[in-house]
Figure 1 (cartoon, one colour):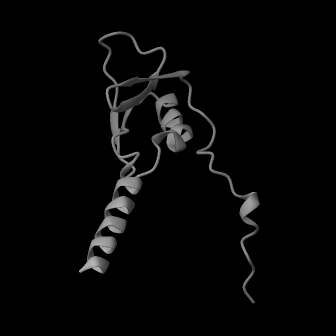
Figure 2 (cartoon, rainbow, N blue to C red):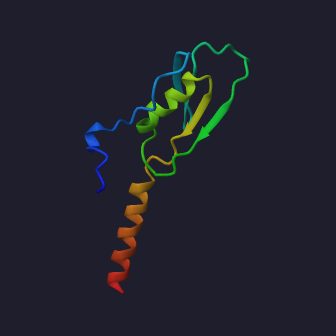
Figure 3 (cartoon, rainbow, N blue to C red):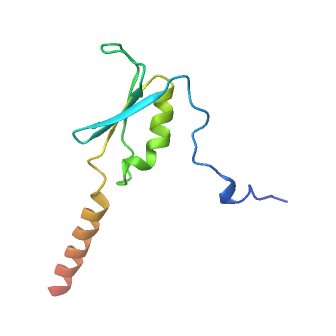
Length: 102
């Protein structure tokens, strides 16, 4: 007999315990940047370019991005995709409306 894993309410979106670094974030152009706050100017650190690809708002991923930065990484997330669902839906509606008129 199989058992259920548990209720969805018991699941967490938390990426886990933070790393040893405190973090800071800022925006520059269409990018959101998370990084260790103790990173000195000119100091090198591993980098991650985060592209969620789901056409949603990048701040939804802030817990994950902050978590990665707390382990010493600089994370850059492009926010240019945040409105693509709206644009795509509008294009679909315009296309179906035009097709119905033909």
